[in-house]
Amino acid sequence: NTRIQIEKGDRVTIKADGQISMTPWGTEYTSGPDGDGNQYGGYDQSAGIPGGALLGKVGTSDKPFKLGSSHTFTAKKAGTLYLAIGMHPGQSGSPFPGTYNVKVRVERK
Picture (cartoon, rainbow, N blue to C red):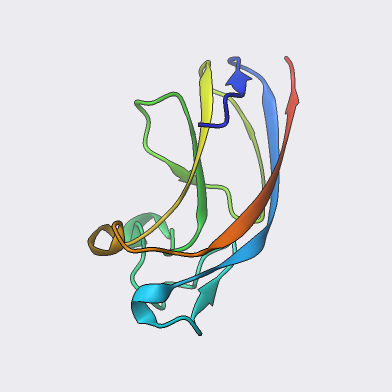
């Protein structure tokens, strides 16, 4: 929960960098905000979202979408901006140490 309130029509730009360890496969395996290229089990392979990818959503009811290291979108609805890291459902309880540094810019409509 970023605590950033988005209004319908706002233009939101995300820039991210950093690295996390994909520890279920060993600490030498890492991912950045764009994801691990589906090497270690994708979050949503049908949508092309690899594990480790930075995800976002506005509000609590919609499905998350890939933000990666750079993404701009126009909000289709109002709500709080949420961020997450996409992981294969079987690995969601595993630790993934590291940090993604995220900058959010909101241009009000």
